[in-house]
Image 1 (spheres, rainbow, N blue to C red):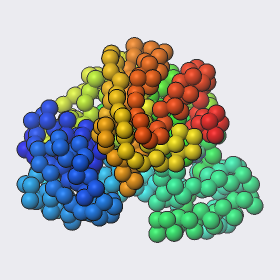
Image 2 (cartoon, helix red, strand yellow; image 1 turned 120 degrees about the vertical axis):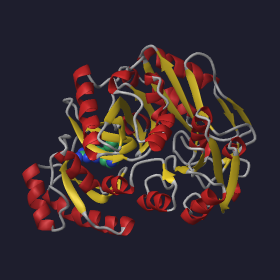
Image 3 (spheres, protein in one colour; image 1 turned 90 degrees about the vertical axis):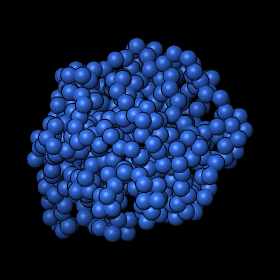
Length: 445
Ligand code: MV4
């Protein structure tokens, strides 16, 4: 096992990783920006190193300073968390070249999945269902139009270098197609320095369902079932749950097995998430793969009882998965509520001083947060201040528990998304499981 791990992140995920390390007897090194001296990850780590100024490019994205911090602290591995450098293949490679284990997949797998068109082609070859569309990128407008007509309108134009909703354009007919094809390419060129686009059939009102996977990097792959992530706005998830009410047992089994098999065949190492679109008829299609631990991983931990961050550390250190597929069972239902420092209506960030802070407790509740009373929410970083995760024996109990806990949760001095979560739990379509990715726009515009 590692002796000392450096955590190249901040906030709740840095704390989450420190907790897993401490339970495994691993020493921790926190890195922090000049604005983060009073942050909890600095207080809770065994040692800490300041790596630069407040803005991410000066500190949490500053590879040279992070590697220097790993060297002076004599760390043997680096955990990137999520965001920042987590899916940067250059960083994963620099870690490797400097003799530090990157706790995540290989730079080659990060690159492969970072190009959405290549990722799709690879998954298709591995037997994963994909949305009908062009085979690979299409650069010529006329050729693209022929493909669009063959697939049938409406279609989606997606940037190969995009992802997470960036660089996407819809087209309902030939005229809008030719116009949007050019704008999509131009936007992709400006945003990613790469104008490659591909075409697929539009899946109407899909649900976003993702499978948590792990690989040992040596031919074994396992899955931890699904997370339902359809409750999101502008590609920012707000509430996630597991399992999904939209899957029957046969579809759940099929999605899990297909995903685990792809991970095994890829020789993928460590944690990953395979994202799917689920249509109204129950068909699922590969969308993207994330090569990091995700914000919403706790809902999977709550229903399986397995610590996924500990598992990341064990797989990175040993190259082996200590559990088999048969060891992973679903127990009950979990829901995660993201408490963001935002106006609950406009979603405009609301940084500032937390004047009062009290978190709920009791049976079946978990809080992952780096906030405390008198903590100042900084404007430079993500606005998420806490994740409240509830577990119940079934979905109804989880919903009732969520409501009870949202009433207990006190955050004063800034605006938060707590009132919006309470409204969602009162919506009968949500309670009945009748929702798709358009839910928030439709009911809470
Ligand atoms: C789609 C789609 C419909 N049809 N692709 C959005 C994020 C990006 N990763 C892919 N996305 C979508 N791709 C086809 N062929 C609809 C979306 C989409 C979406 C997907 C998941 C969750 C929320 C979404 C919101 C709008 C659009």
